[in-house]
Every structure is written in C-alpha cells, then in structure tokens.
Amino acid sequence: MRAWRAYVNGSSMLMDRLHRELQDTHGVSLADYEILVRLSEQPNRRMRMTQLAEDVASSKSRVSHQVARMEKAGLVLRRECTEDGRGVLAELTQKGLAQLVEAAPTHLRGVREHIVDLLTPEESEVLAKVFDRVMTHLRETNG
Image (cartoon, rainbow, N blue to C red; front, side, top):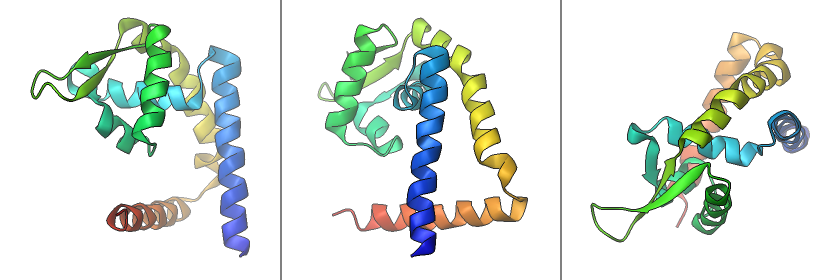
C-alpha cells in the first residue's frame, strides 16, 4: 500500500508541477506539449488521430477535442487521410513547432530536476522495467 500511495501521489504531483511550469512559462499545457512532441517525431510531422490517442494514453474523443482546440490556436491541422479516406491525421504546423522548440528546454529541465536527477541509474532502470511491464499488461488486457 505504501508503494501504491507513493506512486499515486508522487506521479500526480510530478505531472502537476510539469504542467504548471509549461503553462506559467509558455502558456502551453502538459497535454498539449505531449501532442506537439509526438507529432514532431513523425515523418512529415503528422500521424493518425487514433495512433496519437494511443501514444499519449488518452481516449480518441479526448484527443479529438484537444486537437480541435489546438487547431483553433494554429498549433496543428487536421487533415483527411488520403490513404483510405476514413482516417484523420493531425499535423504539426510551423507555429506548433515553434511553440515546442520554445517550451522544450523548460520541460526537459523540469523532468531532469524533478525526477531524473533524483534517481540512481539502477533506480531509473527498475522504474523503466516496472512501467514497461504495467503498460504491456494493460495493452494486452484492454478488451
């Protein structure tokens, strides 16, 4: 129970802090930042909305609303998938890329300061293994 409570509280506090640092400094939420990162890593800076939702561990509906809001801000575009005509792609705009480039140092500094530098290399490896196992389990039992 101690491990569970420490995880729940610690991860919540960490996400809140990282969000606040991005929001206060750059006016971008942690959730939006994660979308910008995922799109920036893709060929042509675009990907299917369903894959994007999976990559950020969110529902398709939530990501659709989030991307619609980001599109109004000029950070992303939604495009029809030309491969099958049914899918929708999210695409990073130049404005979105500029927002990401500006916010990345703040986020990376926060991640380093609030978790990476607090762990030994061995603790980091254990943490990665534990959450790889948790994610694998949840994906395998998801329906």
